[in-house]
Length: 144
Image (cartoon, rainbow, N blue to C red; front, side, top):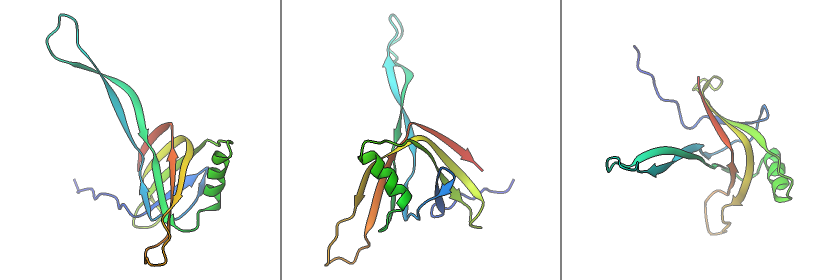
């Protein structure tokens, strides 16, 4: 059996409602963890038993050069104005050919919750980077 090569971590797209938005320099990808509920059985051995608890989804953070996509900015503006718009989004991993998918994370009921820009300094030679943090309620991973 041939050895499978891992996918590249630098070729990805963000899909919101079927439309590719933004060009990103860096993405903190979705992640999830399950809290443990520990208990001991009465009269049982001294072992501690574990049950699965609630699932905690860590937010996705998108970073890109200055010039927030109008679609993303309008979505964030709606949240800031108290008009939350929940959307389903997908982070798509792209193969070297630039077209085919190697993997996909579907995030459901997403809401932008934080937006920031890097510090501006005339003495610096750094690039202005904007950040957008997105929380979501459910996660699905699809391997190509």
